[in-house]
Amino acid sequence: MSRKIILSTGGTGGHIFPMIALYDYLISKNYDVSFVTDKRGEKYFTDDTKYKIKIFNINSPFNQKGLFKIISIFQLFVSTVHSFFFLIKSKPKVIIGSGGYASFPILMAGYILKINILTYETNTILGRTNKFFYPLAKKLLLGFNILNNLQKKYQSKARHVGQLIRTSFNINSIKKEKNNLFTILILGGSQAAEFFGEDFAKLLSELDKDFFKIKIFHQCKKDQIDKLKLAYGNSVNFELFDFKANIAQLMLEADIAITRSGSSAISEMVSLNLPFIAIPLPTSLDNHQYYNAKYFEEKGFCWVQEQKFFNIQKFQKMIIDIVANDRKQLKIKLENMKTATKENVLIKFEDEIKEYF
Image (cartoon, rainbow, N blue to C red; front, side, top):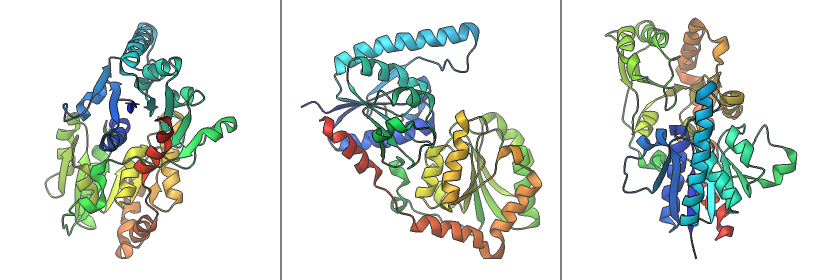
């Protein structure tokens, strides 16, 4: 019997990394798995021989205007036609789409060909592609156990499976480096965040100079590096990077993270018991990053600071208060994380697809 599955997702790290974890697990269970994404996702597949990948040359039509919008729609149409031939040849039993416009062609072709479609939503609010396809899907698999914009008539399709985490984020498999300095990790998602720029660097340098010694791991864009080096100066202990394959090691070494709140990144922090201050991306679709962060704030895992209310002096005081009194606030968040139930997401995922084989 065929055990073919296609995984499809957008080309950002937040989309790709969770699905790579699922790919690796399903391969270990003797499923025949292929991966579909767009050109942005190629850079995340460091071992080309390990993965069967289909790349579509498409761009999102949602942020385009005029001729560029027409071209993007045409690319989606062409990719959908290519998907028909790809699916007819590969004959999968199941297609799992986890959002992103790159999922649209393969899901549309799969639906027309009557292939079993499952959608996986990692945010607390459905993204555009999943919102379009979940009424057509057999099941809607959820990363969080709430979904704010799910229509009641489709609630019977929803199954909470949890957040897929990269296998490298197994807390028992990472050796924690000893570090006596209070360590801060600044993350802006796989695309980095310009908001965490020179003002942040100056703020942290002042903390290091006037209050307590710190060590900083700071994710940034390559074109920010020179300016950030000047902003940090020579006294503070810092490291700048645009991408690190071993980000789990840095998370385990850190005492706290300052981060955007894409579902994958903050779920990985929770899996490694790393408290964080979330500053949600205010332009995220339907403000989903804010609701992701609030979900974990209500569990007592993090602090949430909205960018529209952000004040650099108040933020500095916030960090000082977190560290004050022998890190009491931080210890409470850490204990909340340690006592939370950790889900076996991969097994729950497999349980949801077994019936189609």
